[in-house]
Length: 164
Image 1 (spheres, rainbow, N blue to C red):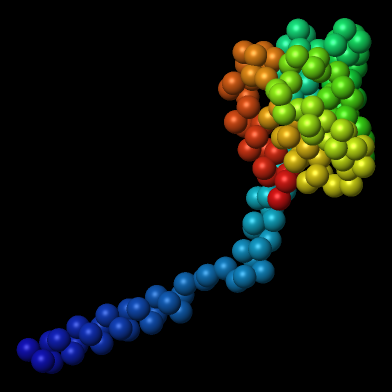
Image 2 (image 1 turned 180 degrees about the vertical axis):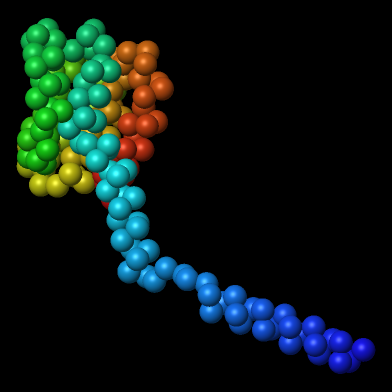
């Protein structure tokens, strides 16, 4: 009985040793490269210009000033093409001034001045993403088109990706 048990233990041990020698585990640098490749395929879809454009497109015309309504299509087209933080920050500042005061919540007046200042001096996509989220959070829900409810979670997830 002891010899059978010893034989079984040796057999299992030998199998494990031979299996572990044939197992090709990826090395840490390979894993890092794979992670970077996945990130590069995911992050480009989270383009900050597209996100600001999507926010703008989902605002109801009733929420916008008459002046901004006239320039909304051109504004959206230009914003989608913008990639630099300074340009995107200026777009957010312009958008915030194009939204009627009645379409913003009560807390907006307390932060509007700092928001515009920060937007105009934005130096990183991370900052712009945070500002876009701040602006969106102060817009009253009734100021959006009905499709925003479905688009918003994906939009917010993309903002989180860019704000890291």
